[in-house]
Image (cartoon, rainbow over all chains, first blue to last red):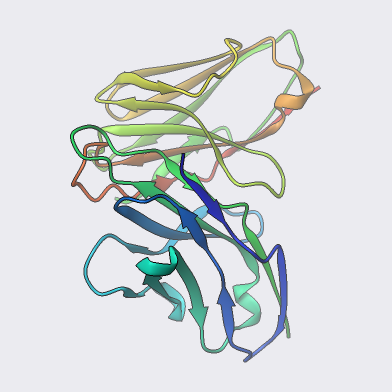
Length: 117
Length: 116
Protein backbone atom coordinates (compact mmCIF):
# COMPACT_ATOMS: atom_id res chain seq x y z
CA UNK A 1 0.00 0.00 0.00
CA UNK A 2 1.13 3.51 -0.71
CA UNK A 3 2.00 5.93 2.08
CA UNK A 4 3.27 9.48 2.26
CA UNK A 5 5.48 10.90 5.00
CA UNK A 6 5.94 14.55 5.75
CA UNK A 7 8.73 14.85 8.28
CA UNK A 8 8.00 18.25 9.71
CA UNK A 9 4.81 18.79 11.66
CA UNK A 10 5.29 22.51 12.24
CA UNK A 11 7.91 24.79 10.73
CA UNK A 12 8.44 28.34 11.98
CA UNK A 13 10.45 30.75 9.84
CA UNK A 14 11.12 34.46 9.64
CA UNK A 15 10.30 36.34 6.47
CA UNK A 16 12.95 36.03 3.75
CA UNK A 17 14.20 32.71 5.13
CA UNK A 18 14.48 29.78 2.75
CA UNK A 19 12.04 26.91 2.99
CA UNK A 20 12.33 23.21 2.38
CA UNK A 21 9.55 20.81 3.35
CA UNK A 22 10.26 17.12 3.11
CA UNK A 23 8.01 14.55 1.50
CA UNK A 24 8.76 10.86 1.01
CA UNK A 25 6.47 8.24 -0.40
CA UNK A 26 6.46 4.48 -0.50
CA UNK A 27 5.45 2.91 -3.80
CA UNK A 28 7.71 1.07 -6.18
CA UNK A 29 6.00 1.99 -9.41
CA UNK A 30 5.26 5.15 -11.34
CA UNK A 31 3.62 7.94 -9.41
CA UNK A 32 2.07 11.34 -9.92
CA UNK A 33 3.10 13.79 -7.20
CA UNK A 34 1.40 16.90 -5.89
CA UNK A 35 1.81 19.63 -3.33
CA UNK A 36 -1.37 21.30 -2.10
CA UNK A 37 -1.63 24.35 0.15
CA UNK A 38 -4.46 25.21 2.52
CA UNK A 39 -4.44 28.80 3.76
CA UNK A 40 -6.23 29.46 7.06
CA UNK A 41 -9.96 29.08 6.51
CA UNK A 42 -9.59 28.37 2.81
CA UNK A 43 -9.80 25.33 0.59
CA UNK A 44 -7.04 23.15 -0.80
CA UNK A 45 -5.23 24.68 -3.74
CA UNK A 46 -2.75 22.96 -6.02
CA UNK A 47 0.75 24.46 -5.72
CA UNK A 48 2.49 22.23 -8.23
CA UNK A 49 2.49 18.76 -9.71
CA UNK A 50 4.81 16.25 -11.29
CA UNK A 51 3.74 13.68 -13.86
CA UNK A 52 6.83 13.07 -15.97
CA UNK A 53 9.78 14.83 -17.59
CA UNK A 54 11.95 17.42 -15.84
CA UNK A 55 12.13 16.39 -12.17
CA UNK A 56 12.40 20.02 -11.09
CA UNK A 57 8.90 21.42 -11.14
CA UNK A 58 7.97 25.08 -10.84
CA UNK A 59 4.69 26.00 -9.22
CA UNK A 60 2.75 29.08 -8.31
CA UNK A 61 3.90 31.81 -5.90
CA UNK A 62 7.61 31.00 -6.35
CA UNK A 63 7.43 27.44 -5.08
CA UNK A 64 9.31 24.57 -6.68
CA UNK A 65 9.77 20.89 -5.95
CA UNK A 66 12.28 18.28 -7.02
CA UNK A 67 11.39 14.66 -7.68
CA UNK A 68 14.27 12.37 -6.75
CA UNK A 69 13.20 8.90 -7.80
CA UNK A 70 16.07 7.10 -6.07
CA UNK A 71 15.09 8.68 -2.77
CA UNK A 72 11.32 8.43 -3.28
CA UNK A 73 11.20 12.11 -2.40
CA UNK A 74 9.40 15.21 -3.62
CA UNK A 75 10.58 18.07 -1.42
CA UNK A 76 9.02 21.50 -1.65
CA UNK A 77 11.24 24.59 -1.70
CA UNK A 78 10.98 28.34 -1.77
CA UNK A 79 14.05 30.62 -1.65
CA UNK A 80 12.44 33.40 0.38
CA UNK A 81 9.18 33.00 2.29
CA UNK A 82 6.65 35.72 3.01
CA UNK A 83 4.20 36.15 5.86
CA UNK A 84 1.42 35.31 3.37
CA UNK A 85 2.88 31.82 2.93
CA UNK A 86 1.60 30.90 6.39
CA UNK A 87 -0.54 27.84 5.69
CA UNK A 88 -0.78 24.06 5.89
CA UNK A 89 1.09 22.22 3.15
CA UNK A 90 0.11 18.74 2.04
CA UNK A 91 2.13 16.41 -0.14
CA UNK A 92 0.04 13.88 -2.08
CA UNK A 93 0.82 10.88 -4.24
CA UNK A 94 -1.20 8.95 -6.77
CA UNK A 95 0.08 5.63 -8.03
CA UNK A 96 -0.19 5.10 -11.77
CA UNK A 97 -1.53 1.59 -12.03
CA UNK A 98 -1.50 0.46 -15.64
CA UNK A 99 -4.17 -1.80 -17.02
CA UNK A 100 -6.76 -0.30 -14.75
CA UNK A 101 -7.74 2.85 -12.95
CA UNK A 102 -5.21 4.97 -11.15
CA UNK A 103 -4.74 4.60 -7.45
CA UNK A 104 -6.34 6.97 -5.04
CA UNK A 105 -4.76 10.26 -4.05
CA UNK A 106 -2.95 9.65 -0.77
CA UNK A 107 -2.13 12.67 1.38
CA UNK A 108 0.66 13.15 3.88
CA UNK A 109 -0.26 14.42 7.33
CA UNK A 110 0.61 17.98 6.41
CA UNK A 111 3.17 20.52 7.56
CA UNK A 112 2.04 23.72 9.18
CA UNK A 113 4.20 26.65 8.13
CA UNK A 114 4.20 29.77 10.28
CA UNK A 115 6.08 32.77 8.90
CA UNK A 116 6.90 35.53 11.36
CA UNK A 117 6.80 39.07 9.92
CA UNK B 1 -14.32 27.84 -15.23
CA UNK B 2 -11.92 25.89 -13.02
CA UNK B 3 -14.03 25.96 -9.93
CA UNK B 4 -15.71 23.39 -7.76
CA UNK B 5 -18.53 24.87 -5.70
CA UNK B 6 -20.03 23.44 -2.54
CA UNK B 7 -23.13 24.34 -0.58
CA UNK B 8 -23.77 25.06 2.17
CA UNK B 9 -20.57 26.54 3.56
CA UNK B 10 -21.59 25.71 7.11
CA UNK B 11 -24.12 23.23 8.43
CA UNK B 12 -25.21 22.48 11.97
CA UNK B 13 -27.45 19.49 12.46
CA UNK B 14 -28.80 17.29 15.20
CA UNK B 15 -28.28 13.57 15.32
CA UNK B 16 -31.82 12.87 14.13
CA UNK B 17 -31.77 15.30 11.20
CA UNK B 18 -31.51 14.51 7.51
CA UNK B 19 -29.51 16.94 5.41
CA UNK B 20 -27.62 17.00 2.13
CA UNK B 21 -24.35 18.49 0.95
CA UNK B 22 -24.07 19.59 -2.65
CA UNK B 23 -21.13 19.87 -5.02
CA UNK B 24 -21.03 21.18 -8.57
CA UNK B 25 -18.40 21.50 -11.28
CA UNK B 26 -18.62 22.68 -14.89
CA UNK B 27 -15.19 21.63 -16.10
CA UNK B 28 -16.47 18.55 -17.90
CA UNK B 29 -14.77 16.33 -15.35
CA UNK B 30 -16.01 12.76 -15.21
CA UNK B 31 -14.65 11.79 -11.81
CA UNK B 32 -15.90 13.31 -8.55
CA UNK B 33 -14.83 12.67 -4.99
CA UNK B 34 -15.95 13.19 -1.41
CA UNK B 35 -13.32 13.62 1.28
CA UNK B 36 -13.61 14.15 5.03
CA UNK B 37 -11.07 16.37 6.77
CA UNK B 38 -10.81 16.61 10.54
CA UNK B 39 -8.99 19.53 12.13
CA UNK B 40 -5.21 19.46 11.62
CA UNK B 41 -5.46 16.21 9.60
CA UNK B 42 -5.16 15.47 5.89
CA UNK B 43 -8.24 14.79 3.77
CA UNK B 44 -9.46 11.20 3.87
CA UNK B 45 -11.17 9.73 0.82
CA UNK B 46 -14.77 8.64 1.32
CA UNK B 47 -16.29 8.03 -2.13
CA UNK B 48 -15.33 8.20 -5.78
CA UNK B 49 -17.71 8.49 -8.70
CA UNK B 50 -16.47 7.79 -12.19
CA UNK B 51 -18.81 8.50 -15.11
CA UNK B 52 -21.65 8.91 -12.63
CA UNK B 53 -21.15 5.45 -11.16
CA UNK B 54 -19.87 4.79 -7.67
CA UNK B 55 -16.45 3.21 -8.11
CA UNK B 56 -14.98 3.47 -4.63
CA UNK B 57 -16.54 3.43 -1.16
CA UNK B 58 -13.84 3.52 1.46
CA UNK B 59 -15.86 1.58 4.04
CA UNK B 60 -17.92 4.64 4.90
CA UNK B 61 -20.85 4.09 7.33
CA UNK B 62 -24.27 3.93 5.71
CA UNK B 63 -25.37 7.12 7.47
CA UNK B 64 -23.46 8.81 4.61
CA UNK B 65 -25.12 8.22 1.26
CA UNK B 66 -23.61 9.66 -1.93
CA UNK B 67 -25.52 10.40 -5.10
CA UNK B 68 -24.42 11.57 -8.52
CA UNK B 69 -27.51 12.83 -10.40
CA UNK B 70 -25.46 13.88 -13.45
CA UNK B 71 -21.89 14.48 -14.51
CA UNK B 72 -21.78 17.96 -12.96
CA UNK B 73 -23.40 17.29 -9.62
CA UNK B 74 -22.49 15.26 -6.57
CA UNK B 75 -24.54 15.05 -3.40
CA UNK B 76 -23.84 13.61 0.01
CA UNK B 77 -26.96 12.72 1.99
CA UNK B 78 -26.58 12.67 5.74
CA UNK B 79 -28.82 10.88 8.22
CA UNK B 80 -28.47 9.97 11.89
CA UNK B 81 -24.95 11.35 12.14
CA UNK B 82 -22.84 11.25 15.27
CA UNK B 83 -20.92 14.15 16.87
CA UNK B 84 -17.65 12.55 15.75
CA UNK B 85 -18.80 13.06 12.15
CA UNK B 86 -18.23 16.79 12.60
CA UNK B 87 -15.59 17.78 10.06
CA UNK B 88 -14.91 19.67 6.85
CA UNK B 89 -16.36 17.76 3.91
CA UNK B 90 -14.51 18.38 0.69
CA UNK B 91 -15.63 17.67 -2.83
CA UNK B 92 -13.14 17.32 -5.67
CA UNK B 93 -13.23 16.55 -9.35
CA UNK B 94 -10.79 15.40 -12.01
CA UNK B 95 -10.87 14.69 -15.73
CA UNK B 96 -11.13 10.97 -15.14
CA UNK B 97 -9.56 8.10 -13.28
CA UNK B 98 -7.99 6.10 -16.08
CA UNK B 99 -4.29 5.45 -16.36
CA UNK B 100 -2.29 7.84 -18.45
CA UNK B 101 -4.49 10.87 -18.03
CA UNK B 102 -3.31 13.78 -15.98
CA UNK B 103 -5.83 13.59 -13.24
CA UNK B 104 -5.09 16.40 -10.91
CA UNK B 105 -7.95 16.93 -8.55
CA UNK B 106 -9.58 20.32 -8.09
CA UNK B 107 -11.03 20.85 -4.63
CA UNK B 108 -14.04 22.82 -3.54
CA UNK B 109 -14.03 25.06 -0.45
CA UNK B 110 -15.78 22.45 1.66
CA UNK B 111 -18.78 22.34 3.96
CA UNK B 112 -18.00 22.76 7.63
CA UNK B 113 -20.36 20.30 9.34
CA UNK B 114 -21.15 20.33 13.06
CA UNK B 115 -23.25 17.53 14.52
CA UNK B 116 -24.78 18.30 17.90
